[in-house]
Image 1 (cartoon, rainbow, N blue to C red):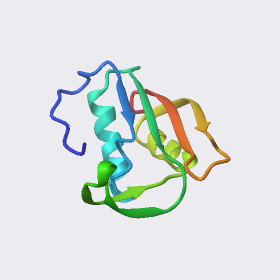
Image 2: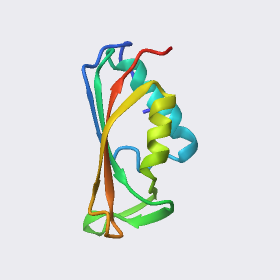
Image 3: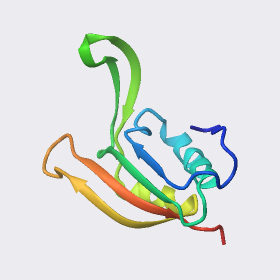
Image 4: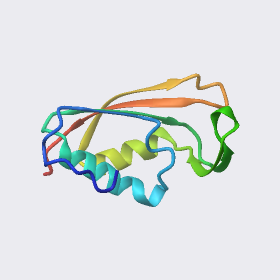
Length: 115
C-alpha cells in the first residue's frame, strides 16, 4: 500500500476495510498519502479498523493456520488526524459495538486538494 501502482487521480473511490490493521503506525501516514495520490479529487474513502491502543502479535490465523503478523488497534481521533494530514476531509464516523472489547470504527472521508 506504500507503493500503489496506479496513475495519479485514477481511482473513483476506495474501500479500505481491515486493510491497515497490519501496517505499523509510523507507516500509516505514508499509506494515506498514497491513497490521496491515486484518488480523484472529491473521491470517497471508507476505512474500517479495530479500535484500541494496543498492538498484538497474531500467530494463528483462521482455520488454525500459522502466521506471524501484528494486529494494530487505533483510536478514531488518531486516524482522523492522519486522514486530514494526508489531504482528506472526514465527513462521518461510526463506532460498531463501542461497549465491546472488539469494537471497530468506520470513517468516511473525501479527497480534498492540497492547500
